[in-house]
Length: 596
Image 1 (spheres, rainbow, N blue to C red):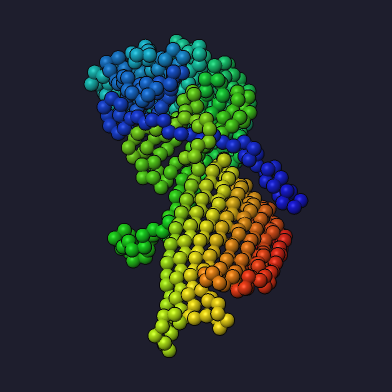
Image 2: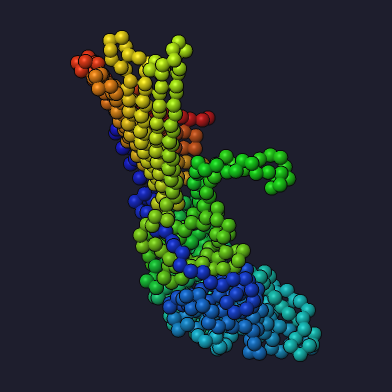
């Protein structure tokens, strides 16, 4: 037993996931949809929120911004007007006063140029009031000056219809990100560099650079600011996030590539909450398959489906889902907890959901890429029954039969054999599984069998001693088993996939078998009481990609025999014999399997 305790301890040490169960997300409501009217949007959107839970959707394709209340009702929209023009908007932010900021591109006339006029094409920020009125437009740097030498010059037409030249920088369709602090300072992230503007749009400083060192970033995919003015950057290329103070001074970096707590994989999304916690969503996906015993229709014509004769219908139905995660950190980068959300790939209405955003209260927003509907999810306060994978089997078998044998040497049915049988059985099986984290799964299963049988035998004549041997045989059998499994994925990498498992079960059954003579003059009676029980505890641990350690300790009935006691009383009511049998077997199994 010490070995299995050691394996369990090894599992706990290998991953702190077991001690830190994740919280699940539950559906609240949905809003939006495909279209161009108020409340609808295209497939290219960016979503942000204010402190009251209002949602702001930047529609890059329809070139507008829409505001929705906390219940998903559209309030107003901002579109291009005589005062400004949305050209290629890329991101959106809202400050504590609900002013709206959109980072976009703008064309600015270069001073001193005429015939033709020269325009610089550069990044700008549009600022709108809380009711959607344009307040001002800021450019990143002074675009009225001479164009940069690395710019590309393109022919254009100015607002008066005259020939002009447009100077653009490379990669003008690149991603841009924006956030605003409580002092209305504006931070714009562009190509791994952050520009800080004051509330009047004046450039204050520039910080950050490309790389993997301190204060450097690679393929940054977002930024956010807390109530103290600290800036956090999603450094996706380095699988971490960075922290800067309001003056642009680097403080620290947090995270690394991996699957565990505080580790990240792929593109990162980052936001701050109202209590200054940091939420980070990464691109890690964890496939889960729940298998059942329910058969698919085997008669379906696969030729109609695929145009081929080979069957594509699996033997049994499987329900596939995809688990994604959101990790929560304090302002110092310390991991606090994680949230999990499940995308049901077996549901045609939910299978296309993709991550969209997280609001300051930690609510999750997913978008249906087909219908373009945004679904809101909140954090579950308690584990719900609906979060479990469940399988239930209930089977009832009722059988009645009769066997008659006519004695060919007489015409008296007194000498015929007649047997009547009744058989009733109920089987119940319950399985339930719960993903505690993306790597740790708890599951349990139980079965219960109840059997009632009755056989009435009418024998021909008597046994020569004057005793009629007609009797009734009754069977009463009850058995059950309960099992618990703990499964841990040590490494999700398909090239070094490793798992660990701990399981245990206990079960038992009893069987009462009685034969009792029917005739009142016949005292013959046989009573048998049989029973069995079993338990097992086991573990399996992948020591590496090519080696596995297994351990099983079990206690069970030897050679499947059942323990029993019996008594037999003869026809005259005299105890004829008794019997007893009991036995057990304990087995310990240890194995090391390797492939080289």
